[in-house]
Image 1 (cartoon, one colour):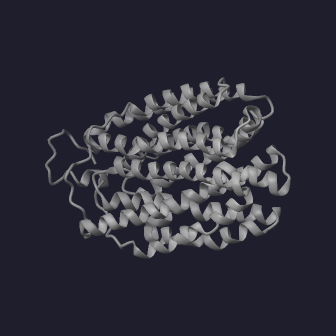
Image 2 (cartoon, rainbow, N blue to C red):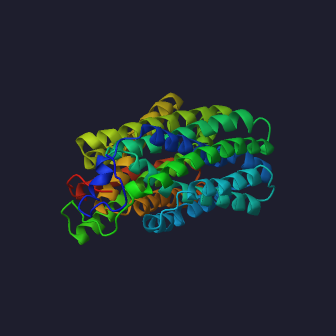
Image 3 (cartoon, rainbow, N blue to C red):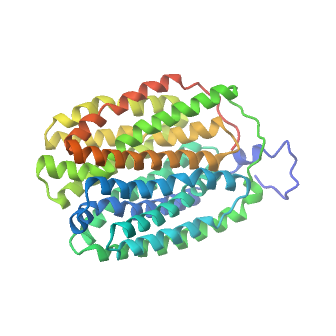
Length: 408
């Protein structure tokens, strides 16, 4: 659909996003940038065993590193999204990557716990500016296929998180902390990609500008909308508190319980994160077809039988169950984000910021608390305790059905 000028009538404005075409090259570019962003971020937990040994850290300190990164990544995101919903800033994307670049270079050189925390915080700030804006760009280029766009965007991040530990095991663990600086090359490439994305975004602001005061199309009262958002927040809590046990401590669990080497444990973590990427990819398009509530229900509660078995099986079945858990749990997030965006139309960036923020925040708090529990009771106890968290998926029964959203 062509729009000749900015004087398009108010009655036609809401239809513009839906009638715009699917722009897969932009969605693909945003997914690539997300891959690089999360690949760089995944270096931090991937080198935890090395940092723990070389700097004499406790599990509690390891958890505090994750907490610092994830709180800086989470607290700013809703505010960034809220502001840019009303005042779009296309070139905020490459600026955020500059913070990530500085943080990863610092991480390669620092020698104290305090400086590791500072480097982690800078990487988190880069993430807080990336996710709300990049999620919005993916939605703007979706052509109305919001689940597909969100899943493609999200799977880029999951793929980056999966490959990060492999690269860290290959180029950092054998050769030392200084080689973390090699990941700065990825950040420089991401700056170029994000600049190109920002240029496209800036040139389409008149076509895709979000409208304030859009009417909701789901037919729900304000109270039911708030209740649904609270339920979604609790589901994100159960998902990412559990995921924190894997992203921060799965290598330690495998090393302690099965006497694996660091490199072997990283391969098992890669299998888990690869399953997360696959689950994320399929979750969004399936939600477009069968409904987001069904995907959310299956994803959270459906993982429970496997998480309950995990602490009680041998290495082979631990690997198998971790892959199943990663695939099933990951299918929910894209559906949760799009479902929430449909509940609160006109606030795409803010909602993305809130839920990415909750993801990082719950993950960070979970890592800190679980690290403290591991120091007191042992790492195996952590996995037994966390195995019950997906049972909170029963809360999905309280999510209302919504009509298909017609606006951004």
